[in-house]
Image 1 (cartoon, rainbow, N blue to C red):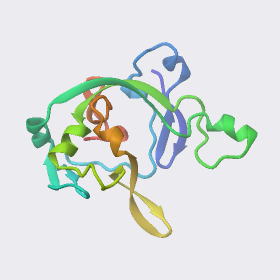
Image 2: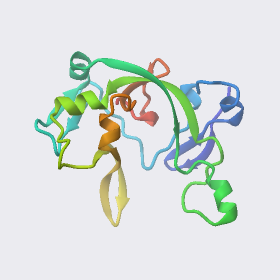
Image 3: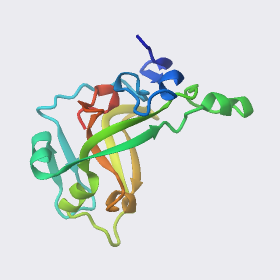
Length: 186
């Protein structure tokens, strides 16, 4: 049994062993790197809803069955890499803040899900004079300046709306539902 290389324990963070990365084109889900900023929420798939709001004409609240009924699913093969991958090497030159990642915070998987573009267009996203980014906020929280806030990120709106942008709201990885450590349920 191959174990992940831990990069942190509270919460768990782990790297894919290099022998797997160099021998497999698709990284097995069981050893795909894990990056958590806080304890992993365990969400109930039967009550989960994706909220789409902000600069949209029609805010949406979509359950997983509603997403499946309303939007086509697509499959892409894509690599993900933590921004801190190889931080140990960087720290040899100059001390860098963050987890001491080696080379294994990267992986390649077969992702299946809903095109973010389709969901945003269904919500009537403003494409002129509105926002320049799509903001994402997870259910996992992080503490900043004594406040608990949702962990988030963003991508350019142009990337999200590009017909060939490849931006998915992923529901599965390598043919299996996402695990909590990889963002389940979506």
